[in-house]
Image (cartoon, rainbow, N blue to C red):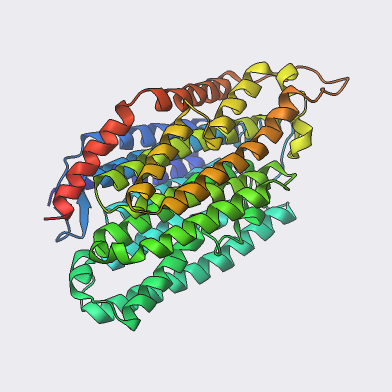
Amino acid sequence: MNFWLMLPELVVIATAFAAGGADLLVADRSRRALAAIALGGIAAAFTAALAAPLGGALFGGRFIVDGAARWFKLLFLLAGFLTVVLSKDLLEGRARVRVRGIGFPGEYYTLLLFTLAGMMCLISATDIVTLYVSLELATLPLFVLAAWRRDDARSGEAGLKYVIVGALASAFILYGLGILYGLAGSTALAAIGRAVAPSPAFWLAAALVLAGVGFKLTIVPFHMWAADVYEGAPTPVTAYLSVASKATGLAFLFQLFFRMLLPHLEAWTPLLAILAATTMTLGNVVAIVQSNIKRFMAFSAISQAGYLIMGFMAPGTDGVAAMIFYLLVYIVTNLAVFACIIWYSNETGRERIEEYRGLARTNPLMALAMMVALFSLAGIPPLSGFVGKFFLFSIASAAGCHWLVAVAAVNTTISLYYYLRIVRQMYIEPAEEDAAPLPSGRALAAVIGALAVAVVLLGIVPWFYAQAHAHAALWTAAALR
């Protein structure tokens, strides 16, 4: 067997054990090296994912690497790398406002890397058993990370709510996959897609799986956990949740609809369109009245999920490419916003939107980076968010869902209003009279600057979408044989 195909996952798992083992051996003052171990391992896995051959299979075809799987893995690794960088100051106690209970970097990085390994295995799985185990590996450590601040009641509440909702979602998914296995007599995704025919049992199974994935992806009406968990979890964990849960849910939906139910995808288009419309509408409307910045970003993330699932309106190359490209844009843009939130929280301990007033005067560069990222989330041209939404809107229009495009356009206008609330606080509202300039560490400032530049470049340089489209074309040609 060609284990080179699984080298990225093996590197991530080995790095997780290395970070956990090193934590037992080094002194407290030497634990800063743990972040270097985690970053080095993720960088090595990223290189291995780029070099892995396409079209190979392991374990009798239960694990494959194709163009779509490679893109998803690269995006997962990018999100993990950035999260480690954003977590360093808070884990190592270098924040000006010390948050109790955020230590234990060895365990933190180990759990983070295990979730990353699960996400990477999930997108390569072509068997429902492997798929479910990978999903649980990607999800279970997130329950612990959400409750990481042991001395904070809100963090414990966030972890408890996440566990309860996650267990319910897993039960839905497992029950639905069990019914599909009973109907098809096989655990292979492609075999299930060929064997099953529309029937009450089939629609029940697919609905159960979709509901379970809806919890992961925060699709309305399965979104109720997001705001409380986002607010209670440590801010770096919230940042990772905002992209990791989205990426995991999107990858699972990709497996469900494009690898298993591709022959039946057209019948799902009306339901997916309704879910997309209700998700983006509720997320945008409720975000208007939020005062806590993390709850605000939770409803922003819910609305972005509505845009993301528009990529499933078309089963061919364009739909896959638009979805992958928008996921890349979302990861870069959302982490840019959260990087600024983490920095501001570390320096001031504040999380309310009105407490960002005058930030353009106390740190103009941070305010500029946050404004660029917020405008991208709102879809302002020529930023990457606008380009990503344009591709998704085109997919929905080509599928005949013109009403959905109209709803999405209205929601984009609504989102501009509430994103501008933060920009108004930073640039128009006066700072406090005794407000001193807020410093920023070089490493964190460099990451935020790089993310802000990437937000702009992804919108004006077409190379990234062209690459996603080329890999999607390879996947489509293989899937439709």
